[in-house]
Length: 82
Image 1: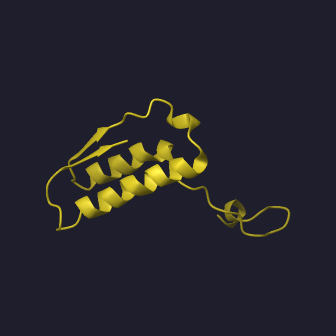
Image 2: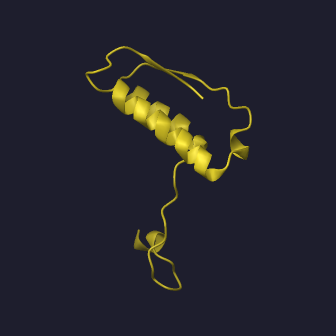
């Protein structure tokens, strides 16, 4: 595992990959596996063309919605539109 987290030449830590729009389906599946009812409306036609920072932000917004929806503060189903 350390070989993955460190540069093989310098031995310095490398940045772990950041989640993007491509990782949202996995996030949704993990919520469903935890028993949450999740409906997703994906309107991004060219998510693969988004800037990396925008893709990370989309992921973080969906993750925040999942967190709030999983709390007692929001017991009803959530719909996420991207």
